[in-house]
Image (cartoon, rainbow, N blue to C red; front, side, top):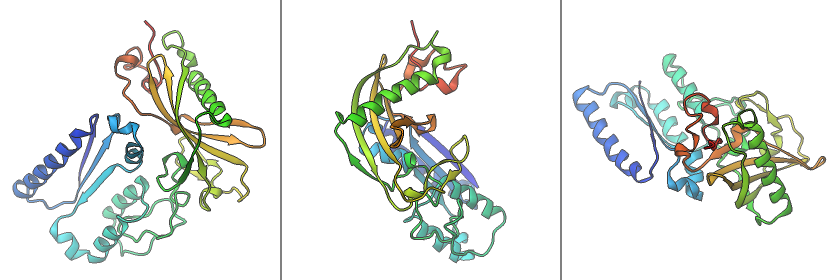
Length: 286
């Protein structure tokens, strides 16, 4: 298995990458005999397009490809047919990992079980699989419906102010080198339109956000907002998902639900070599 991962900062490079990838594949086929599957990933981290709705979707749905040698579809026709079928349905990185495990211990293709977090792409993904089934948190789910809200909405303003406080709390131990952030502008806001699958989601079951707790009842006790805001100094653009507890009228989020959508460049020079986790949030003083 050959793996290729590419990250680009300008959208125009993506087109060049496709052409380059084609050339590379040809070289592999001609010079190396191409006898193994090839897997590649294209993810634009801070391209200008990331500040658009299309860019928002692309962060959640990055280009990812497998190229199979000719013999594979002949030797494993059902597995290959399932793989092609699955390109039209909901999949996740967990499924890719399961697929790699499957390659090491190849079994008979079957219908995937929606109760499992990871399903091999050589098995058939259930048609009605949801983000909740796949343990994809709301912030990263591209299948959810959002209702756009006025940026002057009372709850939106409260959520935005909470978020800036949250960021300042995250960098609090380093305010000697990182400037205190202030809300400059709310650029966009939306509220999640609950779906049956989402109503089962309560919280992350682990600190990394990989395992979900789906034991919640169908009664709506929280609202989930998604905001795009700009902070100063530095004109940083952030996209964040925030949960409002309706009973307590409080907000909460976690750092894994925060996306920096423009480049921080030299703004993080004071932490770039030591405090890597702060690079997207710290505006260095001086």
